[in-house]
Length: 391
Image (cartoon, rainbow, N blue to C red; front, side, top):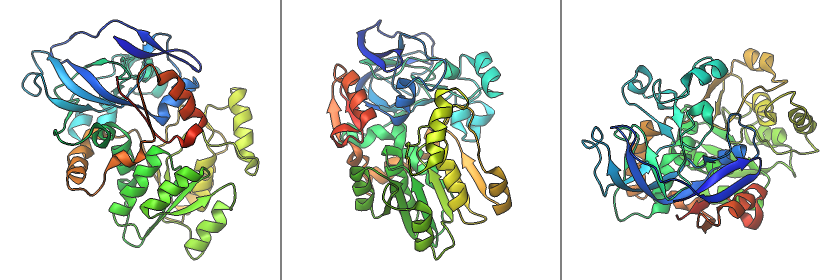
């Protein structure tokens, strides 16, 4: 089959690889009808996330048709079922899964000993996302093996386009979780840093959850325009002071809730010297990530407010004003998305017409187009916000 394969830093190729096979009775094989390039795939593209190996198949946003089912998954799946595959692989049985904390499933990371050493305790297995999370082949391919398939799937109806359903596997529930864990109240101002695909979902989620006003922060006109179309107030950080604008919009009090949808690759802006210093430190291996957004959120957030982090961070960050956060009494909530905790509700909202996640798609191509579209997405060329691939 054809698949997008990681060969090293900024080297993704469309290769012919071995077709996946059933390896465990709980497995299923899914013929991929649509997959996507995620912003966190760019962290792998740039080789900022450790433990990628040449030959690894990328991709963790995919959906398709079940074509083969292991003997222990047949009670939950059958050939012909249309499914979205969550990026988190879940057993459904461990203590964390029973609590709905699916992204930290205790059983699905097949490189647990390695991950224990790096993280202290292993997290769940993830598709197409380094050997720290199991080294599972991803779904930017014609077919994907789904381990623990009896629990790691979302059945979806016919009659709704792939583009409207695909993002149930990652960016839609991630944006939703960002808003839910912020504990939004009807009088709240919610400030969201980053108007990429996850940020766009967080904006709409915050509005659906009843925020009084949502403020979206970015610098790309096409992203700000998309945020404004949803009903957000926008701030272009290259043109305005984020702190001053947020204070103006909140009577000097600051937003009650702040969401980080940027993560480890905050934009380098010479008007924000810490972002430049972060890049130098990252290049010299003095820190892993560029946490400018975290610092700005801590400074901007109203005392006793909530900081919700869904942007991906990979390791060590520097000069975080933790004393400021402690003295202001801020609450931090963060983590990879517990996808299946949210998908029944979100699928119902799609079916009811409350939201159509396909609004975020700007580019579509084939797997053969994938390597070039990675670069288009990285460079934000041609107003690229979200790429969907059709194997």
